[in-house]
Length: 293
Image (cartoon, rainbow, N blue to C red; front, side, top):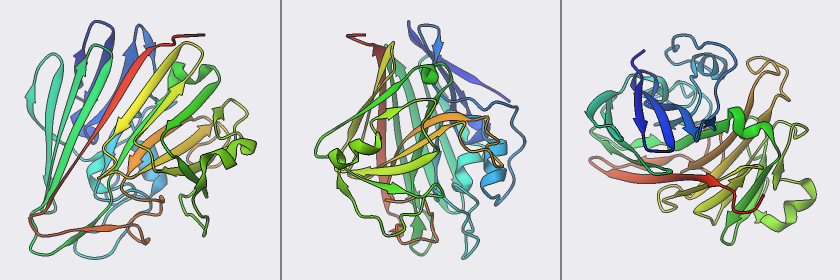
């Protein structure tokens, strides 16, 4: 695969256009902070299920589009788990030492994505336009997953704003759970992630930024909450023994999304993109050494 490397003085990322325009590796001051699978990936399976997707996942950060969650094998444009664009080959339009622009133009959708590294920041700006002759159901999620060396010490989550939260089932379904104030979840220790944290998933609303800290670094993630009003939290610290995780994955998903659950297009959280309508969104990740350790 053709890996594209973007760098600044302290930060380096690897972009893999052939596998969903993914940022597959992030290294800051010599330490890796994005998730990497514990075994080599395989070729993507068309319209695959979750197990197929995980087997072909190269880790890191990629767009889930136009579906995020379970496969949706209906209609004019059936979608595999996490959307067909998430593991498709994207075309490189422009590239420099610190930025790259990519494009996915299939299924009468045109999605453009710009990734830029500057100092200790990663900035991602994306758009999608419906070129079909009828409205399209869609969900978009930024599958931003921290891992590797970053998860070797206790993690603290600090959302900013009037945060509300609800727990999801591990398959992403809400099962009728309502959003409540973030403070009401402190007794369940959602603010921290350790090696003892069970495999689980939840979702925030009412925020547009969050700080994630370990003993050495803090990562601030902010996003366009108008297009991405929710933030999925996925915690997999080797707790899932069954396939496809097999007790081997350590990952922390911090995932801005247009949907309030992870069911996918078969659920009630899908939106519709009108004919010729364009939506845009952006996400920024800033990493630095902790001010106080």
